Amino acid sequence: MKRLLWLLILVPLVFAIGYFTSLTLRIARQSVHDEARAADVIIVMGAAEYRGHPSPVLKSRLDHALTLYARQLAPLIMTTGGAGGDPQFTEGTVGRAYLIDRGIPPERIIVESEGESTLYSIAAASEIMRRMGLHSCILVSDGYHIFRAKHMMQSEGIAVYGSPREAAPLSRPRRYYLYMRQALGYALWRVGISA
View 1 (cartoon, one colour):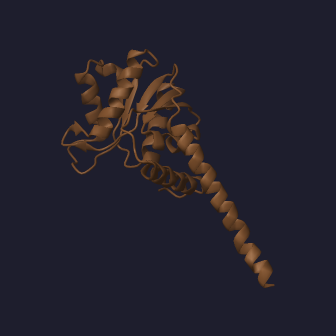
View 2 (cartoon, rainbow, N blue to C red):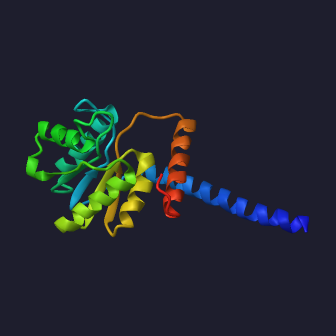
View 3 (cartoon, rainbow, N blue to C red):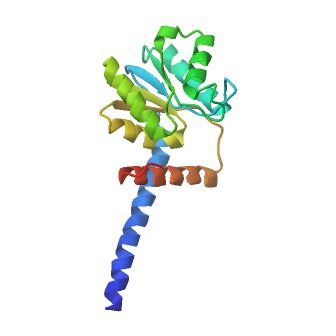
């Protein structure tokens, strides 16, 4: 009887560890794979803004979107993200202002400014795309974030091509910490828990 009890504990545990490890490795592979190709819109996932100015992470994501736009991979750019610490500004509107300052025509920019999480921003961006008749996107974010955000958007019926921003190299422990955190967030999302 004890042996059966141990098996009932051990088998699911081994399965969970295997799944989590496999998922972490898939996230790691996706994080360095640029799938950018022609699409209807470039979506820039939000990141912190400081009193109306993009944080270095958001600036880097926006600069990457500018490069993709200059390559004429999509005719539109969507900025996402709601208010952070300062309710006067949202990540989405700060991103829009940054892009306009760099020569993108305002009519080429779509803003999603309500999202307070990846899941919320993805749902709102997908709804905007549906209303505009857009079916495909290039998703710009940090490499470790692409896998989870991409799968969330695909679940909304959108064709998604991940394109990670340029980022400073991270130590291996830091990279795998970020991959594992995303793996946990993805696994929770798959079972219906928002993280």
